[in-house]
Image (cartoon, rainbow, N blue to C red; front, side, top):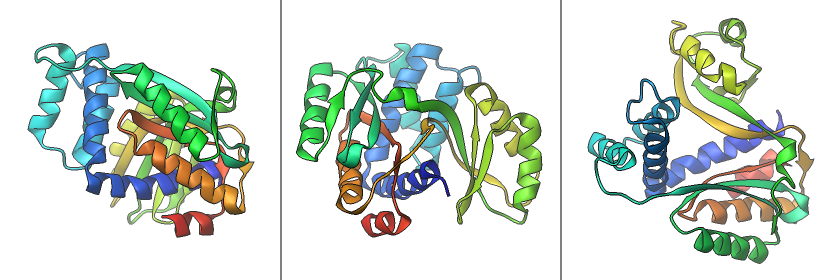
Length: 251
């Protein structure tokens, strides 16, 4: 199992906890607003908005909340203007971090992140310090059903997917930015019995991973957890390869 896949697993478990706490609503509403501001309020012609709306529905966000967020993005309703900023940094053991944020106060966000990183054994880095080791990819998690891994592989290969991983409870499909939407549509229309897309998003995927062990591994997980709890932070990605037992104990 790859380091990226293991990290996806822990993020997936944590995502369920975040949703229960209401964190997911805040983050997704921001994403919907920004997506609508940049690409317009029609989800059919705005792939980023379509993904954000899909995420909102996955956590049972009321339709009225979605509509208001879209209208704030298009200017039909008054709303906050968020800036998209990506930060780079290091955690314990030299783990590389990429932190995506949507913020209405850049000074507050960078100060908060610097404090959290320093407090938990990490530090902010210059732009480009770690991003060279990451690629922007489409990542699709697919519910298992009455079909085989080979069945799904045959479906996605023709559409141009890069990889397919069996993650015990689900399959994870990765694709380039150009092939992400075609692969997603092919999976949706495949007709495989019991197939269902649980999530589809654009992520930073590490090209190579770094093995992080013992207390450093626990420190990385704790650091990322507290960073993700910051309301300005949308996503955190790492190249840390952490043993599954450590992650299961943390979750």
